[in-house]
Image (cartoon, rainbow, N blue to C red; front, side, top):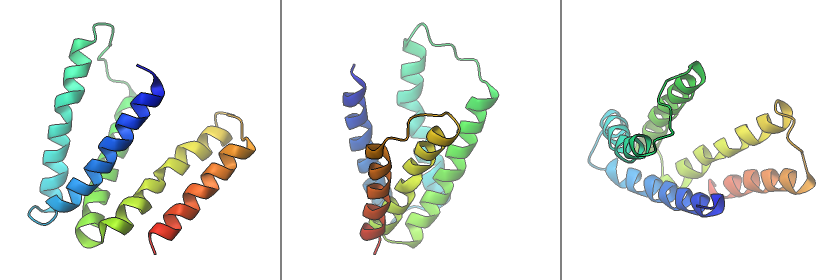
Length: 132
């Protein structure tokens, strides 16, 4: 499957996730949301991991660090979502896209093209405007 189609699927699912998560804050606590949403997310992930024969399921320190960071981000997201409006929380937390973009340029020496820099600036401006 082409990576662009996968990006559209991820975009749509994350958009739905942000909205449904806000609805869930009306009847569930942030700890319950974080726990059960994470447990539920393991269903498609485990199905994929165990059906793709060439996948090696051995953990590594970087995988563990990625999981820990995702866990802390998930907790912070649900706490923020329970306390603030989804129209502000979701765009602000969506700014995470700038972190790997900047780190890719600085640490991985990926090209800092004018269009990428304009895209990052536009994303920052969009989130600023959405969260006002």
